[in-house]
Image 1 (cartoon, helix red, strand yellow):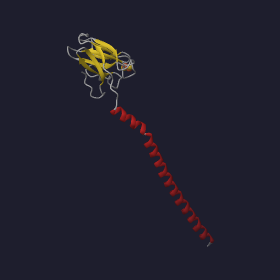
Image 2 (cartoon, rainbow, N blue to C red):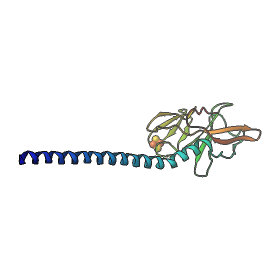
Image 3 (cartoon, rainbow, N blue to C red):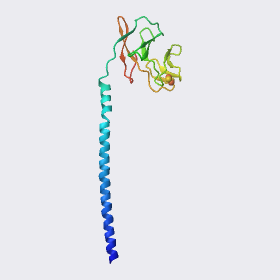
Image 4 (cartoon, rainbow, N blue to C red):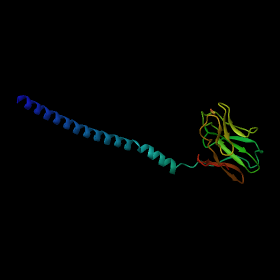
Length: 173
Ligand code: FES
Protein backbone atom coordinates (compact mmCIF):
# COMPACT_ATOMS: atom_id res chain seq x y z
CA UNK A 1 0.00 0.00 0.00
CA UNK A 2 2.82 2.41 0.84
CA UNK A 3 4.30 1.64 -2.50
CA UNK A 4 1.07 2.58 -4.29
CA UNK A 5 0.80 5.82 -2.32
CA UNK A 6 4.39 6.61 -3.10
CA UNK A 7 3.81 6.01 -6.84
CA UNK A 8 0.67 8.16 -6.76
CA UNK A 9 2.52 11.03 -5.11
CA UNK A 10 5.40 10.76 -7.57
CA UNK A 11 2.97 10.85 -10.49
CA UNK A 12 1.30 13.92 -9.08
CA UNK A 13 4.60 15.59 -8.47
CA UNK A 14 5.75 14.86 -12.02
CA UNK A 15 2.49 16.18 -13.47
CA UNK A 16 2.67 19.39 -11.49
CA UNK A 17 6.26 20.01 -12.55
CA UNK A 18 5.59 19.29 -16.20
CA UNK A 19 2.55 21.55 -16.36
CA UNK A 20 4.42 24.28 -14.55
CA UNK A 21 7.34 23.86 -16.90
CA UNK A 22 5.12 24.03 -20.00
CA UNK A 23 3.39 27.08 -18.61
CA UNK A 24 6.69 28.79 -18.05
CA UNK A 25 7.94 27.83 -21.52
CA UNK A 26 4.83 29.29 -23.17
CA UNK A 27 5.16 32.51 -21.22
CA UNK A 28 8.83 32.72 -21.99
CA UNK A 29 8.28 32.06 -25.69
CA UNK A 30 5.51 34.63 -26.01
CA UNK A 31 7.53 37.20 -24.09
CA UNK A 32 10.64 36.63 -26.18
CA UNK A 33 8.61 36.80 -29.41
CA UNK A 34 6.99 40.09 -28.42
CA UNK A 35 10.35 41.52 -27.41
CA UNK A 36 11.87 40.45 -30.75
CA UNK A 37 8.99 41.99 -32.73
CA UNK A 38 9.30 45.19 -30.73
CA UNK A 39 13.02 45.43 -31.44
CA UNK A 40 12.43 44.81 -35.16
CA UNK A 41 9.68 47.45 -35.24
CA UNK A 42 11.73 50.12 -33.50
CA UNK A 43 14.87 49.16 -35.44
CA UNK A 44 13.12 49.69 -38.77
CA UNK A 45 12.37 53.39 -38.08
CA UNK A 46 15.63 54.78 -39.51
CA UNK A 47 15.29 52.72 -42.71
CA UNK A 48 11.66 53.70 -43.23
CA UNK A 49 12.50 57.36 -42.62
CA UNK A 50 15.41 57.23 -45.05
CA UNK A 51 13.38 55.47 -47.78
CA UNK A 52 10.60 58.00 -47.39
CA UNK A 53 13.00 60.92 -47.53
CA UNK A 54 14.78 59.55 -50.64
CA UNK A 55 11.56 58.91 -52.46
CA UNK A 56 9.87 62.23 -51.81
CA UNK A 57 12.34 64.91 -50.95
CA UNK A 58 15.45 64.30 -52.99
CA UNK A 59 17.05 67.71 -53.43
CA UNK A 60 17.14 68.90 -57.02
CA UNK A 61 20.60 69.07 -58.56
CA UNK A 62 21.56 72.54 -59.76
CA UNK A 63 21.63 73.35 -63.48
CA UNK A 64 25.13 73.45 -64.92
CA UNK A 65 26.08 74.63 -68.40
CA UNK A 66 28.31 71.91 -69.83
CA UNK A 67 28.72 72.80 -73.50
CA UNK A 68 27.75 75.18 -76.25
CA UNK A 69 25.09 74.05 -78.71
CA UNK A 70 27.62 73.47 -81.49
CA UNK A 71 30.67 72.81 -79.39
CA UNK A 72 30.80 69.06 -80.03
CA UNK A 73 30.99 67.43 -83.42
CA UNK A 74 28.99 64.29 -84.06
CA UNK A 75 30.69 61.37 -82.30
CA UNK A 76 32.65 63.61 -79.93
CA UNK A 77 32.39 63.71 -76.17
CA UNK A 78 33.16 66.15 -73.38
CA UNK A 79 33.92 65.33 -69.74
CA UNK A 80 32.50 67.38 -66.88
CA UNK A 81 31.83 67.07 -63.16
CA UNK A 82 28.23 66.84 -61.99
CA UNK A 83 26.50 67.42 -59.67
CA UNK A 84 29.53 67.41 -57.36
CA UNK A 85 33.24 67.79 -57.98
CA UNK A 86 33.86 64.11 -57.27
CA UNK A 87 31.31 62.82 -59.82
CA UNK A 88 32.78 62.68 -63.32
CA UNK A 89 30.35 62.58 -66.21
CA UNK A 90 30.49 62.60 -69.98
CA UNK A 91 28.43 64.37 -72.63
CA UNK A 92 28.29 62.52 -75.95
CA UNK A 93 26.90 63.78 -79.22
CA UNK A 94 25.47 60.86 -81.19
CA UNK A 95 23.92 62.71 -84.13
CA UNK A 96 22.82 66.17 -85.21
CA UNK A 97 20.17 66.34 -82.46
CA UNK A 98 20.91 63.39 -80.19
CA UNK A 99 23.01 63.67 -77.07
CA UNK A 100 23.52 61.36 -74.10
CA UNK A 101 25.17 61.96 -70.80
CA UNK A 102 26.23 59.57 -68.04
CA UNK A 103 28.24 59.37 -64.91
CA UNK A 104 31.39 57.55 -65.94
CA UNK A 105 32.31 55.85 -62.69
CA UNK A 106 31.89 52.18 -63.58
CA UNK A 107 29.14 50.51 -61.59
CA UNK A 108 31.37 47.46 -61.08
CA UNK A 109 34.39 48.74 -59.14
CA UNK A 110 34.50 52.40 -60.06
CA UNK A 111 37.03 52.61 -62.90
CA UNK A 112 36.51 55.49 -65.33
CA UNK A 113 34.34 54.53 -68.30
CA UNK A 114 35.05 56.16 -71.66
CA UNK A 115 33.16 56.62 -74.89
CA UNK A 116 34.63 54.40 -77.59
CA UNK A 117 33.42 55.97 -80.78
CA UNK A 118 34.85 53.17 -82.95
CA UNK A 119 32.82 50.43 -81.25
CA UNK A 120 29.89 52.68 -80.35
CA UNK A 121 29.99 51.53 -76.70
CA UNK A 122 30.71 53.00 -73.32
CA UNK A 123 33.74 50.99 -72.27
CA UNK A 124 35.35 50.18 -68.96
CA UNK A 125 38.94 49.01 -69.52
CA UNK A 126 39.44 47.50 -66.06
CA UNK A 127 37.47 44.29 -66.53
CA UNK A 128 36.03 44.69 -70.04
CA UNK A 129 32.72 46.14 -68.99
CA UNK A 130 30.54 47.54 -71.76
CA UNK A 131 27.51 49.81 -71.55
CA UNK A 132 24.93 50.79 -74.15
CA UNK A 133 25.39 54.43 -75.12
CA UNK A 134 21.66 54.72 -75.86
CA UNK A 135 20.47 54.13 -72.30
CA UNK A 136 23.50 53.28 -70.15
CA UNK A 137 22.43 49.66 -69.70
CA UNK A 138 25.01 46.89 -69.29
CA UNK A 139 25.95 45.12 -72.52
CA UNK A 140 28.68 42.82 -71.25
CA UNK A 141 31.17 42.23 -68.47
CA UNK A 142 30.90 42.19 -64.69
CA UNK A 143 28.86 45.40 -64.04
CA UNK A 144 25.35 44.63 -62.80
CA UNK A 145 23.85 48.12 -62.88
CA UNK A 146 23.51 50.71 -65.67
CA UNK A 147 25.45 53.95 -65.77
CA UNK A 148 23.49 56.73 -64.07
CA UNK A 149 22.17 59.10 -66.74
CA UNK A 150 22.38 62.87 -66.50
CA UNK A 151 19.26 64.80 -67.48
CA UNK A 152 19.98 67.38 -70.20
CA UNK A 153 18.28 70.63 -71.08
CA UNK A 154 18.91 72.50 -74.31
CA UNK A 155 18.79 76.25 -73.85
CA UNK A 156 19.60 79.21 -76.11
CA UNK A 157 23.08 79.56 -74.68
CA UNK A 158 24.04 75.91 -74.49
CA UNK A 159 23.48 72.44 -73.09
CA UNK A 160 22.81 72.15 -69.36
CA UNK A 161 22.93 69.26 -66.94
CA UNK A 162 19.77 69.60 -64.85
CA UNK A 163 19.69 66.54 -62.60
CA UNK A 164 19.96 62.78 -62.63
CA UNK A 165 17.47 60.44 -64.22
CA UNK A 166 15.92 57.66 -62.19
CA UNK A 167 17.92 54.46 -62.61
CA UNK A 168 14.94 52.48 -63.93
CA UNK A 169 13.44 53.65 -67.18
CA UNK A 170 15.93 56.36 -68.02
CA UNK A 171 15.80 56.75 -71.75
CA UNK A 172 18.42 59.35 -72.58
CA UNK A 173 17.73 62.73 -74.15
S1 FES B 1 35.49 48.37 -62.86
FE1 FES B 1 34.47 48.48 -64.75
S2 FES B 1 34.26 46.45 -65.36
FE2 FES B 1 35.24 46.31 -63.43
